[in-house]
Image (tube, rainbow, N blue to C red; front, side):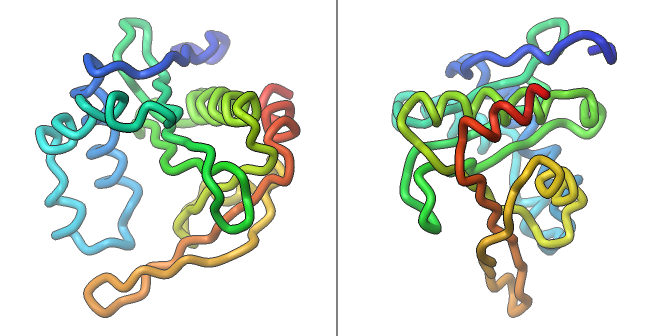
Length: 179
């Protein structure tokens, strides 16, 4: 994608399973250094692809969207749903972009499409959780996210913290993402 070409976002299908898995595994290995290597390396493309093949059938209410390159290969994805979580109506479960495609508008386009869909489905507020040391937090602050909670996992006796961000109005977040 060139700097002036917009990211292409479309719904994921079972035929996208391998591409989704590649994005998931690559992203987890390059942006999740807080987890020990045994957890990051245990994730395989084949295992993830098996799960993604049936995801849309098993989770028909989820919002699962891809951002693609010029050949329609997935370079990022977002998984979101309308569900009560930390006193919000909707949640972005995952937002991943391949390292070589970051800072090109894919994450922005995916988050815009997901929040627009959540709003259309009746979610007023929306949120997501991100590792406390992830540099993407600066972007979430910039687009109006408000830290409202912390989630902590125990990973081999070591705490791994995530900050929960909230946007009071999904529609307002969607507008900020196109500005």
